[in-house]
Length: 114
Length: 113
Image 1 (cartoon, helix red, strand yellow):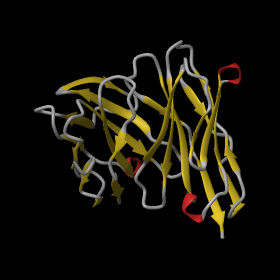
Image 2 (cartoon, one colour; image 1 turned 135 degrees about the horizontal axis):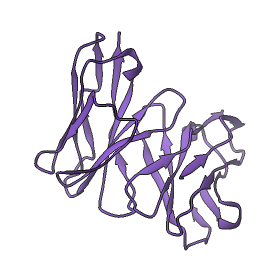
Image 3 (cartoon, helix red, strand yellow; image 1 turned 120 degrees about the vertical axis):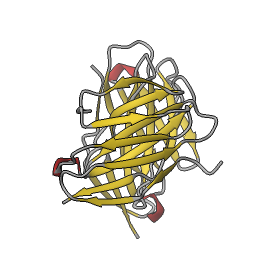
């Protein structure tokens, strides 16, 4: 079975603080991909990153960074120096070895207070 | 290409009526997906097409739901005899084959009265 858990339902931070969004996944597949999407108040899901199960290197893109650890089945997302525009719901998703469908977590709603 | 488009953006209907939604994917994408999202939840997979073939359907998809992608381009999702529990945001996404990221449309928000 494929499952993604985002235990943090809502997080509030003050602008310029760093924040980490947690994602824990379950799968029996040896090949899988993990994704993060952002859903701003306008509603459209925006792709942020894709990571395959064989690549545990952390990735940094501007203020965003991702920490993938197979040992703990986690794929956490950190925003450094948060900004008001980062306020959104963030979803972690898993795609198994068939690559046919995505399994989404329930999302973490991030509010950045000015 | 401007991305995935969906029409209508909003639909209000009375219980028991049929509704149809349309999705136009990114033109070079051969995979097209339908998801349903309710408040406070992540998108839930409904079905997907590779070109014109519908290859997988979720057990969530009751027999009142049907989807088509007749020429491998746009897709329609029809809900017959709508129920209040069908009220949700219906999302369409497209991608290239394989484990590529899916690009989502703005969704159609359905309200069943």
